Length: 245
Image (cartoon, rainbow, N blue to C red; front, side, top):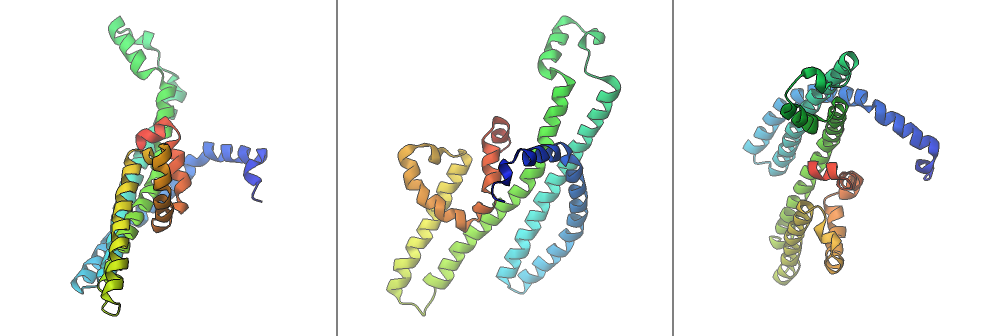
């Protein structure tokens, strides 16, 4: 079963699913947008109640859930709009075909400019398809990023609360263990964020990558990145995905 992904029949099935995935995207987006609109108000009320009752952990959970809802809602609405534009462009292509710049009868200056910028209507449709597919995928990837950030902040709070401020532990142990852990998490966050912004610069340098690897390995568990790592690197292995990221 582990080798099924190398099977030609499986690859053919994946290609077919990719070509028809827009229908599932629209279906999922529609149900998700409806559900998100229904969930935002109750989540806001629950988070406010938790805040008023000084339930910090519960408030943090509802706050993260609310932020995630807004992120998903924005991205999925954008996805539906672009996918609708893509469907409209397909219908127009069926009626009118590709753009005939000569029939427009513009001056050579404008004709050459438009040919250079637009190239063809098919290219426009292909670009819309790429943006729609990537926006749909990145919508859920952003939720993992929010969750990762929350877990890292939670790790700092956990160390501060249960080690540094724990009177049941000796002062020597608290400071000898707690402070290095806090510093490791903070500097690890900064390194991971820098590596994210530079799209893997720390992984490209031979000697730096050896020093960064232990931090990367630990943070892959702290941020649960092992769950969504293939998505990240699939974005970064092509120019279009890097630009979107």
